[in-house]
Image (tube, rainbow over all chains, first blue to last red):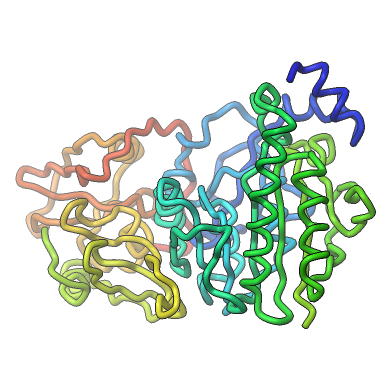
Length: 285
Length: 152
């Protein structure tokens, strides 16, 4: 798809020019790794020029031109580079220490390690992904000191353990139109339909892994309704014990399309970060 | 330095560094994935997978990240580096240090301004080698202030 065609399509959801410009000018951001250093001590020892983020205590926006991979703080495992938008799904999931959590498509492990920090290395997180992507998860677990994680390589569309998890995160593989400018060139309706079919199967599998009363978060970094609202609607119509929940956080967003008002669409101009879709679903039986 | 099992590794950490492993960290030997480090709340009883991360294997040696995580508990065999040496260490270069007569050859925890960088292998004539199997080339470009409340 050409850029103009993409902007026309994006314009049906939001201010396309603002979204596109914001995505092109996103500043690097990172999360302070509280598994290795308290936030107050990080702020005391770090010389990085960065600004804080109102809605997440440990998030920082880098305000200087430096490769974070070459920062002392990175070498010491005190920070993890992560886009601001991608820090939101774990906040919506809101895991508690001691719980059992499934991160169904976990690589490279950014959200897994964020969840690990939120759980203070207690409880258990199962971080699942394809075998070829496992290395990215494992490296991040080691560098960041996440110990409450088991890494598995099962097919996310057929997760075998039913009714076992307090919380499940499905940050699904998607067309990445909200995060990757190169993805625009690869964009095709057929491609999106194929992805949506996989996402629907993954979401059913993720929901079935929940304990009664458990919470599921579905997220993507793309805009198409086929990969977002339609996937969630399919789950809601397939499982009568699935309920779309209100997300109770004070973070700029727009509501979902097609009547899914409780779902969130985050466009790049809102957080100066990637575009994201997030839905919170509860197993109500 | 080779370890046959987790107990042997724990014994070495205790003898060499005076480190007692905290209760919130467990270690176990696996068949083909070395000695793993994980939280006691983690269980693979119902899940076929790998716990935590690898602290040691015969192929890759001791993980620098493992020592980075527990090195602040060391009471001995610690060498404090200056900025130049810390940058060289992160870049995988061998270091030359003037050593005191009491310092024995073997593994040493390396610190910089009370931050734990990892570990090195102290050899004769004061050469500290970077653990080769985990070598990652980096060119550190900034600095950090001293970690408060620690005295390594």
